[in-house]
Image (cartoon, rainbow, N blue to C red; front, top):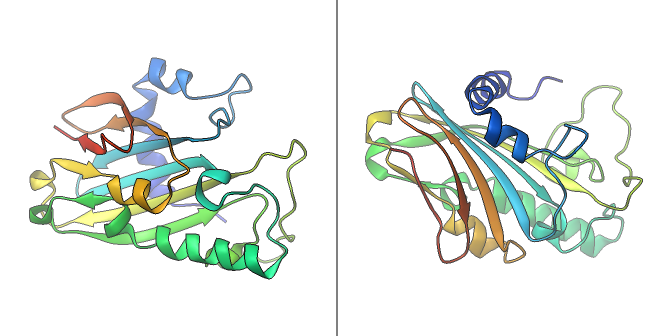
Length: 195
């Protein structure tokens, strides 16, 4: 099942213009960013009136574990995490004047079944299983459509950091028509300047 094709193409096109930044965020296999507890990766792109955010984080930062959710308690924890992440306006605050509204949200983890994340399973998809190395990540794709994108000056991830105190740092790659940059956000520094 394609995952946010428009968002992926926007991020790919804009981040390819940042080769040094893109290279730094990937592991030696060139697949996913390196797995580091307490650290998340966030790619942010603005193209036209669409703001896309891609979050890649160790699952432990969000739910406190990285194994398959088999107990009732673990399943409830995962469902609560997914519900919290789906409140995009609370997780990623944008300037009110920009009038940004969530358009599409997708959450995925190799160790969590799509149903626990509020996703529909692709036909014929197998049940999620634990990773071989004991590490598991969550990928979140968030697309917002802004009625007045020219009024969008910042994205604040303070809600994300407050909701999930497992984050010590979020490494951000930003690409907009006006700016390409990298940032490190912490609980005391949560705003991403877009201009």
